[in-house]
Each structure stands twice: as C-alpha cells, then as structure tokens.
Amino acid sequence: SDVCESFITRLKELLAADKRVIVRDEAYDPGESDFKPILLRIRASNPDVIALCAWRDEATLMPQLKQVGMLNVPTVHHFAPFLPASDTPEMRKLFEDNKAVSVWLRFAEASLNQKQQEF
Image 1: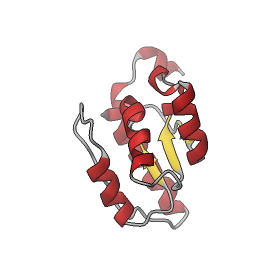
Image 2: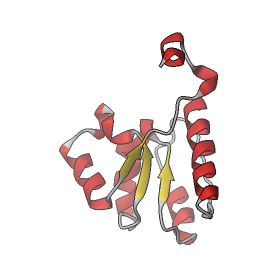
Image 3: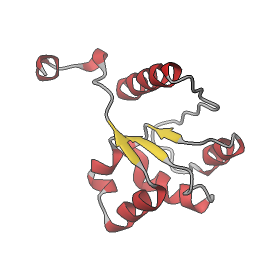
Image 4: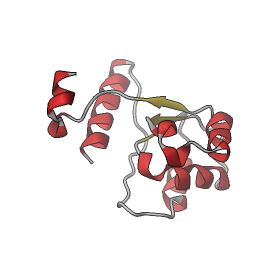
C-alpha cells in the first residue's frame, strides 16, 4: 500500500543515517493468513529488530510470531496497537511481552486528502 511504501522509505532513510542495514525484506499479499513461512525466513536472518507494516493483519501475525518462537525479537509497528483488532487483552499482552513499539513516520504523500495536506 502507499502507506507501507512511505513507512519503508522513511525507515530506510532513518536506518541509513544511523549506519544500520536491513538484513531481510519480506512482503505478502493482502488476505494472507499464514505468516509462519515469512517469519521463519526472517528468523533465519537473525534480526535485532523486526519492522512491520502489517496493521491490518496484526491480530493474525503477532500470535504466529509467538508460535515460531520469535516473541523475544522486538518489533516496530506502523501504528498497529491502536487499531480495534489489536486492542484486546490478548493482543496487548503479546505487544507487551514483545516490547513492541508503534510508530507513525509520515503520511503516504500519494494518497493525501485535503485535510491531510493541510495538517
């Protein structure tokens, strides 16, 4: 999506400025429900942190992160914990145990409406 592309672009800028690198970049199709293969590929890269723009799918992805034994790898989410599907006691516990961080880096410029442009 435009939102995720904008998030990734800004994240790469921030990482480059801090002399950090992305060790693996994964994407998935809308409607995906089995994230375990992707998570296992990420796990094989031994990341320090996982950055996610999976806000529509957090309620599916986070439990699978735990199932594949990666809940100890901190995650950075594009505003996920504030969405209703992610705002349950079970999901809050997963985010807490993971020490997840939620960020908002910018609007997706290609899809700004008038109010967003004024903001």
